[in-house]
Every structure is written in structure tokens, then in C-alpha cells.
Image (cartoon, rainbow, N blue to C red):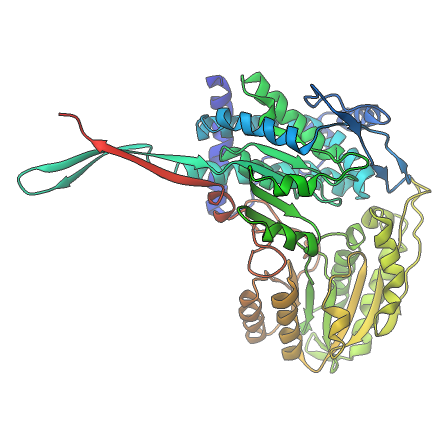
Length: 557
């Protein structure tokens, strides 16, 4: 690797490490897709580059000896195939190539690995718009979310993982002359230490956030010296394929094997995830997706796993200053990307006695109606609704929304198709809301993925807290929102939900929502409940990927 690359990216790395400690706002990659930031023609060029991929082979990845070409992606906006084909390699080939590359990559110094990986992110910056359109037409996210989540926000999460890995590997000195006083003489030893990577990493992607959820584990393994096989969801390949392609290019430019980072796609008639996961040479597995497969991943012997699974996220309503602002905020959180976010709220706990609003008690029925009216107003707004809802990624999610009537409760708000002025064939549905009694735990103790909200009528706020905690501890939770003007109640919610390993956002109104997490500040998932065993990005997320090994010998003479 050239020293120029290290010098170029070292300041970025140092700023990122500083941000890890301060937890203040930090973003290396601007989230606003403005022409004065990314270039006058960046959007147009990105859209054209995306279109060039359609109905073609994706040739940017190293594809020597490809055993086949495969691709299954469909646009949720157009409900037709993208026609993109990716080089397919068997699990055995992917592992063999990764194993060979491992012994080259592990000997590269941590600072050099970090500089190379930062360079790949700097290159990706020029492709954020292309990735945005790729994300739109694989996940159904709206344009702005597609740009931000798969572009700058994902890149910042990747940089966060690089910085954390770099810091942990350089925390201790490489060499030390160790001296112990023994009375008449001193005992002297030369000591050295190496951060030794664990082995091949496998990153299993999801269909809704193909880069944001994938790059933290991918870059955490790479920066700690482990080669990585990225196994995307077969319906959302293109966004992460672009990322892997850029990593491969930077590796090759620096005289390193591109097989240090590989994309492993499923064949059209053969799923390879289990073959990869069960291979004894695969030592690290990052997984985002459903709980059932996540539990399988965690049960595999001889693996270190980092999982994000499903959870049951809660909103606790106790007391507010302005119910209209609260309802608007919650309606947005519920509707954003049609509830297809792991942080989207599902269970809304409301006391049967009502909610204090500005010191006066608002009846329960009025509170529930406020929420329903706010959702209706949002999704029926032609200038906002389609851009907030996006499209439904999986037809099964749309069916789940329509089948929510099986929930034991009263329908407060029914679903309907939402027309998208730009995509007449878009797969859409608006949020549904059902009222459920607190005794009907079977209905609200499971994740109902998609735009489905359950209002649970409780005896009081204490029961709301008790149930939210119980759901998190037993079934997992990734987010929780709470509204209270009482400091004692606030402290109780903090204390109880912290014991359930669940972060809480209090009294959000305006432009910040429970769904959002900021790199370098918010830990995404805690690892403290069944929703997942890892967190983006605490020290454990990187230190479990390598082992400290020491060497010592007497000082000569």
C-alpha cells in the first residue's frame, strides 16, 4: 500500500475515532443530496448508471471462473424483474478463495487495512445516487431514504466500525522491553503482541436495508484482518454488490487479493446461506433478519455470531404537552417506509383512563382517534404520503397487513392501496390500527412486520411499562418511545426498559423520530434482549473478531 493512501485517509480515521469517544454529531458523508455537495449532475448520472445495470450482467465484481450467473431481483415500484445477473460461485469456491486470501490480509497492519477500507468509502461517495436508485428498486424505500440510508448513513456506519476496529487493535503497544526489579539484578524480557484475526467472516444481508445493515459487520471483520463473504438477500443484491465491487477494486490497486471481500449470491435454484454458515472455516457470522433463522445462526457450534433479529417495539403514552404534535410524530414513525424498519413502533400502550395533555386528562378514545386521524392525514396527503410510505418490498408483507384482521381486537383504521404518481404499479398499502385489550398478549407478543399498529388498552401507565418491559425481555425490542411530563415516571421507564436492554426515546416531536439512529452516537441494538446479540458499534462488536497473542524472550546480553 502506498504511503499516500495512508496519509490521505489517516485524518478521516482519527476524526472518526474522536467521534466515537465524544458521541456528538459527526458525519463524514453528508446526508443531503444537494448538487452543491455532490455535483450538479450527480443525480442524473446515478440514475443512468442504475439503468445501465438493468437486464445485464454485473461485471464489476471479480468473476473469473464464474460457475453461473444468477439474479432474482424485482422492483416493488414496477413489480417487474430487474434482469440483473451476478457471478455465482459455489460455497466451496467462495470459502477456498477466502481462506487463501486470509493469509495475505491478516499480515497487513491494522492502520493500512483501515486506510484501504476508508478509501473504499471515499470511492463509494461518488456512487451514492446510483446506490439510491438500486435501493429504491430492490427494497421499495422512497428516494430520500434510499439515498440517505444506503449511501451516507451506511458509509458512516461502516466508518464507525473501521474506527472502532482500528482503535481496539492499536490500543496496546506492539513491542515493549519489560523489566522487573529482582534485587541485585533486573529481569528483562522483550515482549510483543499481535492482534490475530479469527478467520473467514460471513455477512448475511436482509431485503429491506441491504447496505445499512450489512456494512457494519462487513467492515468490522475486514478491518480486524478477516476476509469476508457477503451473502445478500436474493431480492436485494445490487446496492451491496456496488459496495463489494469498490472494495475489490481498492484491494487490487494496492496489490492485495480481491478475494479478501467477495459477494456470494444464491443460484436461482440453490440457496447457499446454510452451506456457508456451516462450513468449519467460517468463524464469524453477521446476520440481520427473522428470529427463526437468527436462532439457527446463533446455535451453530464454533462460530462467533453477531445478530439483529425481530423485535416488538413499544410506545408508552403517559402525559404530553401537545397531543397533536405527538400524534403527528407517531404517525410518521408508523408510516415511514410502510413500517418495514426494525425500529418501527408496533405496540402503543395507552391507559384506559386517558392521557394527560397540558395538565388536563384527554379520554382514551380521543387519544386513539388522534393517532388514527394523524395517520390518515399523512398517508392521504399526495405530496407526502407516497414519499413517506414508499413501496412494500415483499408481497407477503402486504398480505400480512390485510390479514391483520385476525388480531383479536377492534379495527380503528383499515388499510387501502395508495397511488404513487410516479409508479402506477407500485405495491402499496396504508397502515392499519387495531385496538387490543391488555389481556390479549398473544396478539401483541410477536412482531407484525409492516405498517401494523396495535393500541393496547392498559389499566394505567405502570401496567404499560410492565408490559413493554415484558415484551422486550421475552420477545426482544430494538426501540421504545415514551411520552411523559413527569420526572418520576420518566426515571421509572428508563430504569425498567434499561433492564430489558432497550433504548428509549422520550417526548419526540418535530423532525426526530424513534426509527432513527445516528452513527457515532446511537448504539443500534443493545445485545441485551432477544432482538439481537450485538450492537452497532460498541467495542465488543470488533474485539470478538480477533484475539491478542503475546510473545516474549529474554533480552540479549
